[in-house]
Length: 130
Image (cartoon, rainbow, N blue to C red; front, top):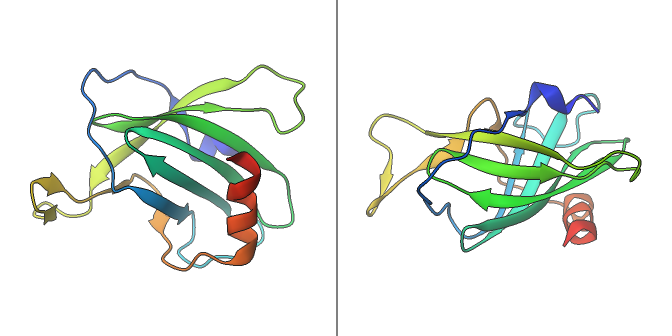
């Protein structure tokens, strides 16, 4: 998979900023199931996350990491176990200049589109990494 399109080398942030707890699903496309597009599903608990990068009809790569103030700081496992894990970060950005939820700024992943519908296949991929 071409994960390089979605992730950048990690820059460690000093302050933690919790993202909404629970399961999140993002993709290069807002429509799930498109072959050739990359997707990221993950579960947030506290400031930790576990998830997977995947493409439909292809392999997936499990990941784990931490939610920081500006990014998801990730360790991505090689799907075949042949290479050491890679460290990356996905930037968090406000949905809009005025997006707020209580005291929290409403954040999203830079360059990806949030997908609200999570199907059985996506749930199975996430479960394989938990």
